[in-house]
Image 1 (cartoon, rainbow, N blue to C red):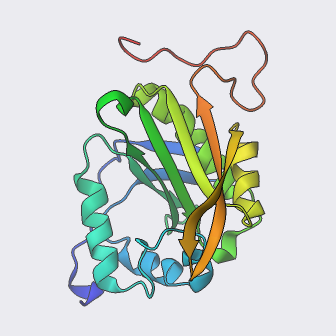
Image 2: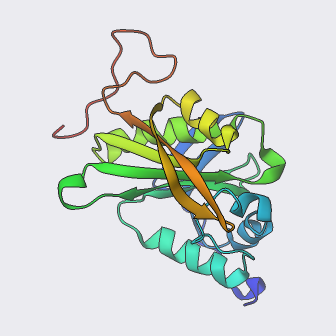
Amino acid sequence: MMFDLMVPDPMVPDPIVLELGDDFRLRCWRRGDEPALVRHANNRKVAAQLRDLFPQPYTPTDARRWVDHARDVDPQTNLAIVTPGDEAIGSVGLIVGTDIFRRTAEIGYWVAEPFWGRGIATRAVRVFSEDAFVRLDLLRLFAQVFAPNRASARVLEKAGYTLEGRLRNGAIKGGKVLDTLLYARVREDPAPGEETGQTRPTPPGG
């Protein structure tokens, strides 16, 4: 697939823009993000900490499929992490539960290797979680990380998530059996840095 044959989305205001500070932000995925997505996602170090559903190698076809999928979901549950220059360098998103779990969602995220260690993932998870509780009227968000991945665990901790348990032999990645750590945050939890007595906005009908 040739990227230069793709027509970028018209430059219209994004329905969702969440500021992360330092001019980094979250916005909806759009056509034209594919080259940056391939450039940053086609990295074994990134894929090593994600589920096998995340392609590796990451091809232009994979990028187009992802962007089309993310754009078609309504309401939006997957946002691009973008630089001040509007380059997509990662993603944060949800898998919303069904039936009795319909107000629960699993959160996932990744950031391109050149931007590791700058607090961008923490800010993205924190801001996105706050938005999801209100915009999607969710009660609980959770995430599972590989136990050896201390950096990802710290992202969740600093974003206000609590360790709820260790799932022994919970996953197989790269041919290795690994424990996973279960983190969660519920809507009643105070936001990181939030003083006692402050509350987040109440969702419509919530």
